[in-house]
Image (cartoon, rainbow, N blue to C red):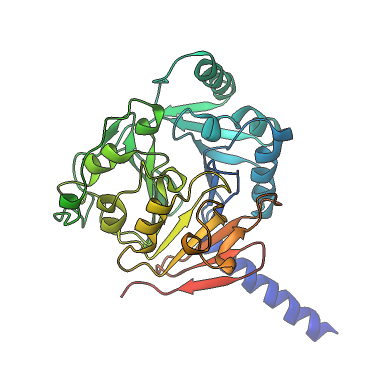
Length: 337
């Protein structure tokens, strides 16, 4: 009996030690908005966006459930990429359920009107009770060993290329500029997370021309391991100049059943050179069988769902895995040699 206790204790200790070495990222289903929870090996946490308001606190509840799964009692940083309802709307409800240490954003709201003003006022009331940090491209901060670099904010982008990047982008010539986007989408805070050899990029809802400005004529970011699709997989974002140049091994699409996952944008991601897998938070109803991935790779295949998440666990070596919380299906990816 004593021997069994020792074996069980050793197993649990090894499991805990292994988990502590991982960077974990939870892609939480907020029905076509964004809520991405990042937990560093140090235990420090960063949430990118808070989903929608209303729905009986649905999105705040899903975020807190994921936080509890990660053994978090607070969120250290909450990055608000921009002031649209599906990204900042859930802030008041979230703050009622779990403490937030520091809110990170791009500054003032570029939009006005009743809805925009109410959203921003609600955010300000909550952020004034915590710490607030306004960031600009080039700013950095750390979650232990995890480095967070701000690539875009308030319509601006990094001027100099990141270390190891800066090569001419061959996909720029195939992409034409569209009409400029004056909305908050174009002002999204975009970040790059680096943990050892592992790199993950999240550009919020950054739109077409801002992507071109960031990536052309030279690729300022370089390649990444994982790309969260810009703007939920809508076709006003996610050009080849961005997606193909990032050369992701895995892409995560934070779409809803009826939002995002548009055919053209989905095809750009799915056909990206070197892509091993595309995972989706939802089956996109408009895409049909031809423009959705296999069921195993979709967290929520039905429109009315329990809000299952996708979880990514990365190691310092650059290896990582993605697991579907709905069915336990998981795939592992080796480091780039």
